[in-house]
Length: 295
Image (cartoon, rainbow, N blue to C red; front, side, top):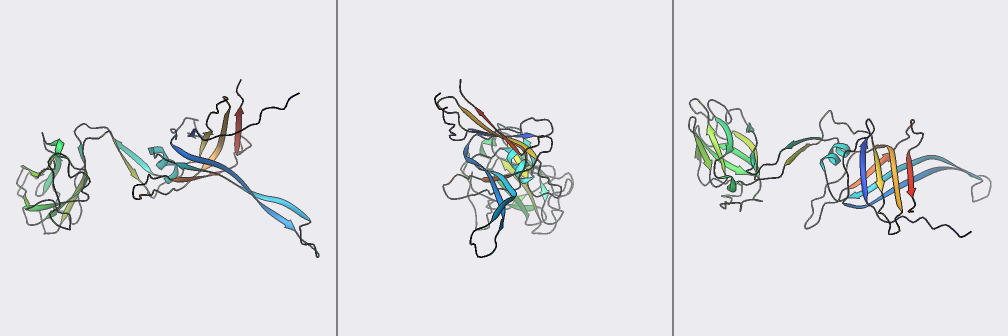
């Protein structure tokens, strides 16, 4: 009888985390740099007399983990690994302007005496520039506007910073009752409240967020007091070999918390994930390997 073909594992194809409650997938990770299942034991060794080597050795606890280099960051990754809360905004061909809120003080944003709203200016959405917009009170009826980044200042009609404090208004904007005033060449307008305008103390602020036309927005909130790191399962597949062989690792009960997000010059961000394997009493195992030999 001839020897059987060697079992050879090559590459990585996908990682699919799934719910332990209903077995449904959270999604799939396919842009991967690699993955490693590691089972590492601690040992108790018995030494005695003049012998430099142990008389007996017993394995104690086993540290079991799966590490992976992930080159994409879908929403579920933040939920599972960072305990994050994710809310989404539907795609918009025109762009979106978030709700305005007060920063310093309580007078800049006010439905009656302050700025009642910030919104898109009809016909000017091509001028939208993404960023965090900060409105600062200059006088009881005027404001200046600052923007957190110039990353989209060339959208539509160009704008530029007026000073090192990131102001984009060359002169203060006047807020009047019930009327809209444009933040020049941004596609955004500020509408005054319904009553007599009094923006309060100079230096008070309000803020809002803007996105130009987009395919959807994910707002990912990390570090909430009620954050949880959900136990889940994982199915990890090696690349299908040229002879048709498949090799799969299923982790029954995984817990994970944390991963780095690197922002480096001209480099893609590649988080390194670590998943700890736990004993699943229902399965009486921590993981299962399924090797499928091609027909």
